[in-house]
Length: 414
Image (cartoon, one colour):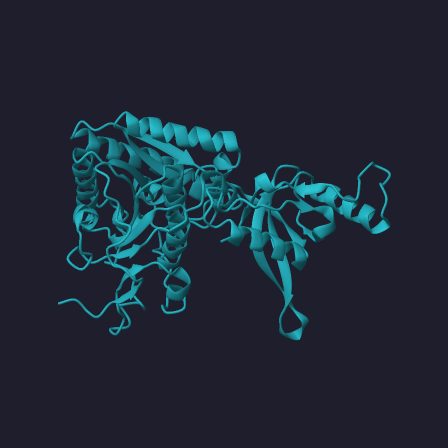
């Protein structure tokens, strides 16, 4: 008998996709692929994952696999005992491991005559709209050809500013790109719990959630990922938040039994399906361009704007909540509304738009309200602000009231 569970929604069986062909993204973590101590591949787990994907494809579903373990596989290949600290060395190990990892996948899928393709991404690859659309089109073409795309972060060249951070986030971005029906985050527990079940026997499983804010205030999630991986349950909640905002149902379930994916997507009653946590997709998902602005673009700086503009933007956003353009701002940002510039950025880079509010002891807190692509560099915006203060055109010709961010290039934070 199952332990008492928590449900953060109103209708247990709503919003379940009924299409005969679903698009499913499956994220597999390092702990499901490599032994944490010996770094030997867990061939039994890998085989079950591959067999599950084959069964899904036999049912006419389209599947994308997001995989970790390039570093773990490289450590085993090079006979190294532990992950080093030096970035260049980790990148070199990842380069060795990625070849071996894809070789294992190609061999296992090849047993079923299933073709696979490798896609290595960094956030920088998606920062240009054309590159983002090229990546989307490439994955779509592979799926249409019946190929299984295998996606991983390009650890050999990525650095902090262009990293997704972990493959949970990468899988959520991928799910949003392909407009997936489901994102499965395979982990080392059956589901999300209110606390760590290994240390707290009173921890209760979370079965379903459609209110992330309420959930975060109810549970305790502090455990990091494994020594080889970069994630943990915290990153899975972030991924669920990103994916559900794009309209993707997100599931956390045990990676050791990937075959549970089939009854989870087929079951009409969540309580009869294998134990898992299901995050329902947002009722009004972000449109593609909004998704790209919010999650595809690197944030290069910050604009602090006045409260009058913030109120106008958020009011327009709420009024437009049921429109097709949901998420895209109805209000452009002009120079007179900008009160401070942070960071160094150039024209067409993305910046966070924030307002400031006072906290105790005179400390100012920043609240993000939007993200958008600027028409001017940070240095130019500062010159424009100075021209505004003098109410005249400066010696380089900067006027005092140009548009800093066009509404078409800005997405309001949900």
